[in-house]
Length: 167
Image 1: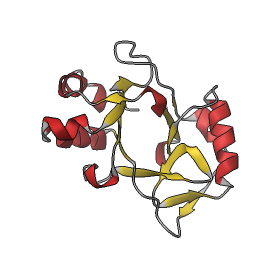
Image 2: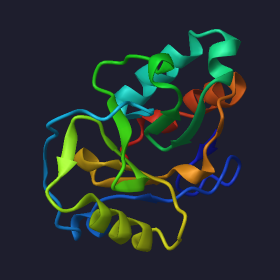
Image 3: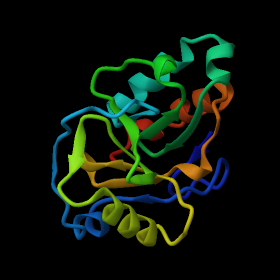
């Protein structure tokens, strides 16, 4: 599992929030047909609840997931049926028109998904970037830095107090 932001111990993923993301004029509406979940994301207290829920799983289940973690943020990738349920978490899926993005399963952008993808990938400074889009916090998380979930690493992430920090 790797971290977003500046935690060089565990990885080097992009996390963009606030002002930069706010300049991208995108509104979100209910999606007519939900996407199949491929990831689950939690921020703040939801990230803590998600981490605790994940730690309650056996090692075989943990081995089936990859993840990215940062200050107040946790995103897990895995098979739809294996993703843990946590109240308040955002479930993300892939829209065929924007395969580089993981978008909220229940929300669709009010612009063409392919245009949104081009803008976000350019913002992330890289072709081939895989990004999770979290509209509520205006956050982009680089998912190509995802690593297998490790019980030790996830517990250390919880113990650092990072989850309680304001994202």
